[in-house]
Length: 283
Image (cartoon, rainbow, N blue to C red; front, side, top):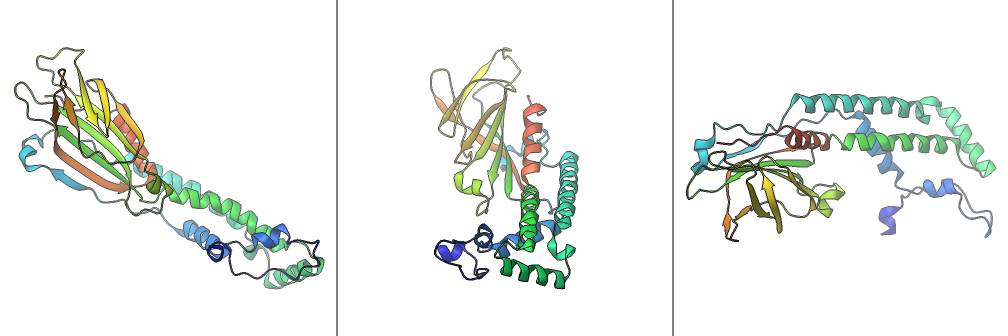
């Protein structure tokens, strides 16, 4: 594993004796510096990624509900967030470039400083400057990662065929990690599930409540339009079950499912809109 962690950059010089261990800067120079610099450069030069295409649609047996509104997975607010975040990243890039020794020093100056560093046994001034740049560059990489399209937003509407009365719906919004994503969260799980039920108004009391079972959890006593959230679960929501007062369980069916890949910024915007503004259609 060591050869995967350490870079093949040679040390700055021979040791002066058993008592003089490697300097902190020589240790830093053995890190995978080329990969670090390449990642910073790529993040600095990248533009706003193209947004993912929306896919999905209605289950044929429920196509007659297609006139009902669905939660938009795109918004102008998302575009504004991406533009603002890109501008913030650009400001960091400018500050990072100001600390770039390759732009501040000529080749002869860098060679002179390198020789001085070897002769004095101290840290190379260029190396110090380069690590200052990498500290700023870490923020550039993080800012770029926030715009990468490695999330999956999934909107699903559920219902069940009523024995009598008016049908009602349950809208579920999921924030998943894209499969095979390099993001650490994809290996840990971390799917977010948000749910709202739109209870039928015909003949229903204002304090009507339902209990639903999903993700091995009972969402009890849900009122109409009441938000229920499950965070840091490890499974996608592929089943919602209605639990009646007498304990009978009735599986619900998918009316429509829409999804798209997006960035963390866009996913958070959709979640906020679902939480604060979205109202499940009520027949």
